[in-house]
Amino acid sequence: IFDRGAEMMQSRMRTRCGGVALAATCCASFLVILIGSGTHSNGNGAFSSPALRGASSSTAWGVIVAPPPSAEPVAAASSDSHPTSLVTGFFAIVACCAAVRRRAVLTAAAPTNAVRGSATSRQATIMFEPEVDEEEDVDVIGRLTENASMVSKTSVLVLGATGTLGRQVVRQFLNAGYSVRCMVRNRADRPFSFLVDWGAQVIEGNLVRKETLPSALIGVHTVIDCATANPEENTYNVDWEGKKTFIQCCEKMDIQRYVFLSIKDCEKYQSVPLMQIKHLTEKLLAKSSLRYTVIRATGFMQPLVSQYAVSILDDQKVYGDDGTSPGIAYMDSQDCARFIAAAATKERTVGKTITVSGPKVWSTSEVIELCEKLSGRKADISTVPSAVLQLTQIVAGCFEFTIDVAERLRFVDVNSQNAGGKTEVMNRETYDILGVDPDNTRKLEDYIGEYYRRVFKKLTKGKYEPEAGELEKEKEDEENKLQRAIRAIQEDALPPGQPAERDVTILSQRDMSDRLQKLFEDKKLAWLEGRENKWFGWTNVAEVVNGRSAMMGVGLGLFTEWATEVSMSKQI
Image 1 (tube, rainbow, N blue to C red):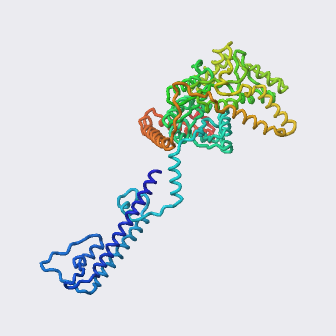
Image 2 (image 1 turned 135 degrees about the vertical axis):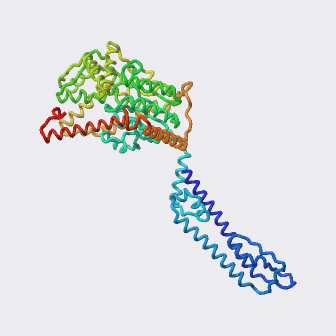
Image 3 (image 1 turned 45 degrees about the horizontal axis):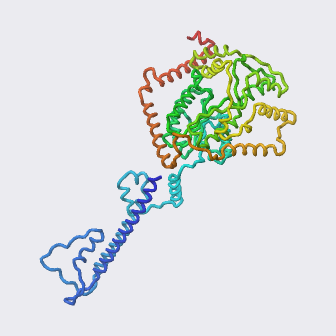
């Protein structure tokens, strides 16, 4: 954009210089006419300049040629006008105009890349002002002004916006009047059109594709990190390598707030890969220069509907534990999103690690009993001992294609290591730090009860229709809870030792984004051209080629079995 502005300024300077040169040439030509048509009288003092009359034709081309030396003085001209000089001056003007016209035509016909790439084309534009669209000028000036402006404090980027918690975070910040940007994967099975309908901006980005990260942070003040690896993805690549690169990009691009979603008691269970990665990410944030806040959350209520409430209502089998689990303080994802919004808008949460949870601890058997009570149905319970889950985890860990399953089954270690222990809930001090009223959090019995109420109403009446004013009342209650959570507090002071917030321009972020993106692209190109991607040897590419060849062989074997009725084992 700045190069474009510089080109426009240079073009206008060339135009002014060209106009001055044209005016000077015209004046010189007119001067030749006037001098050439002057009178000379013998001895009466009239003006006469035969030398200039002899050089008028050369002056028209911008070169002054001195008259040849002569032993005899030039004969004095008569007092009559000189038609030859008049004609010469006239042709000088015509030649000058033709030269200017020819330069204009050549410049208009020259391609854009030639103008930028060759010295000849640049010289052709010295005397010509290219036609520039006024709307393009306004657009360039507008973008220059945008780059020079400061990053808005209400600009938020949400990672994991299509998840259970992420979508609630997007709604909370949109309701609070923030400008929300969502970085989502380009995946068909994860629809994100509802985010656009809500008013959020959706951009493509992936934590495992480093080159897509810097551009997503341009113009962003606060980052809300709710992302984690999907079941089919590698946890290490997404939650550690991807997050590490993303945090480093945020640090380089001067992101002012970073809210990271972690897991409760993650430092106690280092044998669980995801909890270990979460704890290492917390340490990485503590060593960075970011103004970060860590939110450690427990389990959410929303998955309980599909795991227990729906299954019991449909007379399907539900799975419980052997009673050794200490229980979970389930919380509503809307309450957790409100806690995140409160933490992101308060200075006293900078550099803090805050644990949030629901108001009560529930074991698996208690959740099943609650669903039986509210639904009026008897549950078909199948108890799965923790030892069976641990054995399954060990077997799954023996194979590479089931390693992700084994890592997720490691959460059984949380129950075994904390057997007989007591799970703590969110205390009053944490509520005060966030500025949230404990009475505004939803209880599990209210959440499950609301679900059954709507389901039973839909079964009896054919469809669910809210009562008169029910939606308005719910919207008003949520708005009041949000406003109380993000309201400014007089005692909101920055903790000692934490960096103060700084003003950042969009231009600086854009410049750093270009540098980082070029760095990542160069590294990727160097990796593609490296030795590990050669065609020969035990390399990744060779493995892929061998695998495709094996698949082709299997296909050929199946076709042969179909055509000749000879099994693949006999063919081999």
